[in-house]
Amino acid sequence: MLGAQDVALKLAPINEQEAWHMLEKLKSYPLLDGYRGGEKLPVNELVEMMTGFSTMLQEIPAICEVDLNPVAWDQQRNQFMALDCRIRV
Image (tube, rainbow, N blue to C red; front, side, top):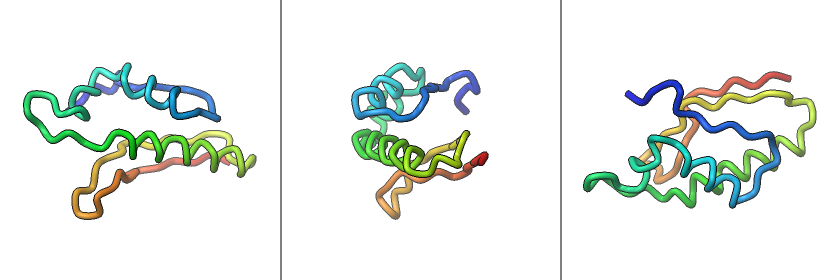
């Protein structure tokens, strides 16, 4: 289990470069990148999810806070998915 302190926070909007920086500063980032022979996940798709979500937040100004936790890779669907989401309007 990953520690609760392994988080990256940034105010929207974020661009691709900012999303990459957020992910790379996580202690758990090596797990996404195939640490010790593990599966290397398509992090670029996670970056796309993050930036798309950021765009959505800009288009819906009633949303003032969002918590996506956890986000996981779904092998069957071949995509990242938010398993739990809290949105405050």
